[in-house]
Length: 175
Image (tube, rainbow, N blue to C red; front, side):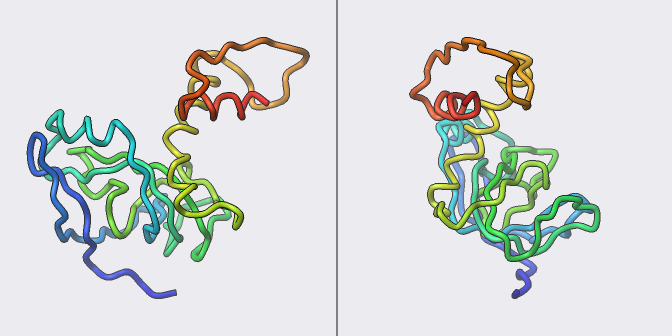
């Protein structure tokens, strides 16, 4: 597997309503980070809203991505390995961490925000999953206090907005 270059192209916020493709440094990994070579990104309505809202100048754009693992930090405990196909969330638009964002050639991600992609799912399809899947999962777990184990009997749940991305994921998670 080839090593990434010391620099990467990324979309970086320049000011309110403005973002531009620029060359930035490829950061060294922290012990819990995974470096992913981006194959595809997902565009969420929040991405356009974040740039329009005037997120911090210099912050990297983007949330959802899919690609191939290039390397991982020394404390990454999952079985994710270089060469694996993954998708995940990188919390861009963060002035406290300008190296993180999905709209870049290489994405620095936390291992717990990555999902392995089966061969039957394309990078394009996988890049649409992370934000909606995590949002749906957090609503069911944090708000409704649903457990990950199968339920002990029937429980009825109304998914208001079931045709939205997050709603569709919640329906699948509840099955």
